Length: 398
Image (cartoon, rainbow, N blue to C red; front, top):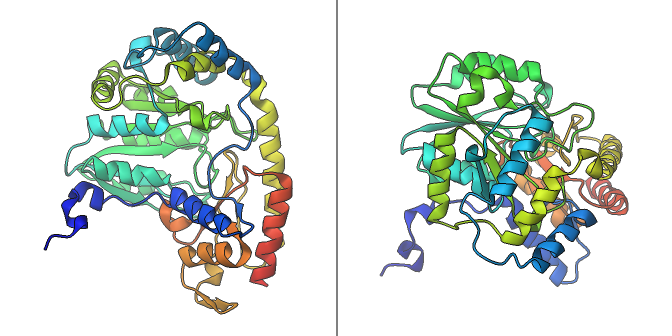
């Protein structure tokens, strides 16, 4: 007899569950049982959306924006995004090169679906965001991890890149500032990697810059700013992280016009245009001075410094100093093979589950990000929650 699982497509059966969402669900289950869970697992700012953006959304409602939107986004929004790219990144795009989607995740999926074929290889500098590998798999491509560690500040070298490229390599995904490590590539580091890619003209670059404004003194450098890479780079961004608009679901790309046209065609058969009210509010968000959201960045930096000090007080956990985003990605491998409070820890997944069950603190295993020695801790939480979380972690580990 055929099981229900076998009735499903190979596509969905082979697709992993997002570990970040799975951990969040597990934390909710424990809360429902009455457990006092502190969640440091989700990559979601704990700030409210700024009032000037909410006011723009209210105005759009009053102006009766309620109809289907153009598949690639309102012209006014695409023009605003062009202005933002020029102002913040030194990139010149025409509105025909912009596609607005229901979140940056859909933007990335669109790009993968229109560029990748079965058998193509996608290079993923590790650690990488959990959905990159799943999206590559959905596109029937093969993903190849390029490892890094705390010793290299979680960044790959040109020599590693060159050694990993094969005749089947079609794309590479860059993410700076990085989720989960918080590390950022400098202009010099990106230009060194570009010199390798210049020798391989058939490789396309997806540059995920969703955390660009959440940086601590090292401005984000856009890969497409390198002249030789502009025609091969798809720049992905959105308003979720920097503007605390995760639920508004607006992401976008700047890309060669032929890729943007293909993404519009793909999106037209899947979701069509993104939410009308969220798009109108996003015009206001991306046109606003970056200084308007600096208060959130300043708070994140204070939390980062606090978390690094708290980690430093725990024997066996080591971390680098992230230059952006709102994560730390400590190495916890010194605990592998040990038994604590009757719980045997063999890997980062065990360690993360141990913290959830014994300390009631939710984190995410580094296995999900291609870094099996680490866990991801989000400090998009209040100072009080962070202090209490690390107090609990320290107590159970000791």
